[in-house]
Each structure stands twice: as C-alpha cells, then as structure tokens.
Image 1 (cartoon, rainbow, N blue to C red):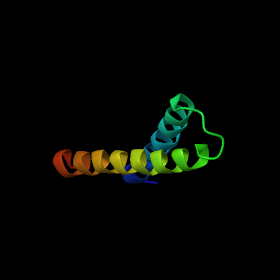
Image 2 (cartoon, rainbow, N blue to C red):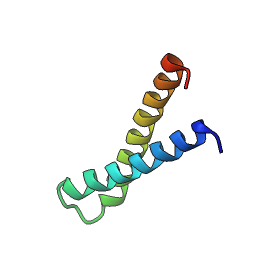
Image 3 (cartoon, helix red, strand yellow):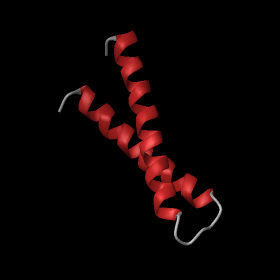
Image 4 (cartoon, helix red, strand yellow):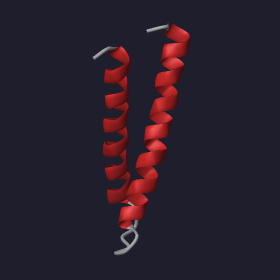
Length: 61
C-alpha cells in the first residue's frame, strides 16, 4: 500500500473514533444513538478526507 491508502485508513479510523466520542457525549436518547453515530461518522470522515486532499494538493506527498 502507498502513502495515500494509509492516509485514507487513518481518516476512517479518525472518523469512527471521533463519532464514537461524539455519540458518547451527546444526550442519551434510546432510539437515536445509532443515527447520531452514523451521521457524525460520515461528517468526520468527510472532514478528514478534505484535510488529506489539501495535504496532498499543497505538499504533494
């Protein structure tokens, strides 16, 4: 695997860990925790992908 694949895996791990932490800190609702986790995981992964894209665009890693 090249550098890009490692960055993508790190981005996905960041998104899942951050989403879990955000879900844990959010108010407790029995039926909504799964959707809170999914929405925040997608949001954090997209933000992480944008940061990785900027890194590769600016620094040509």
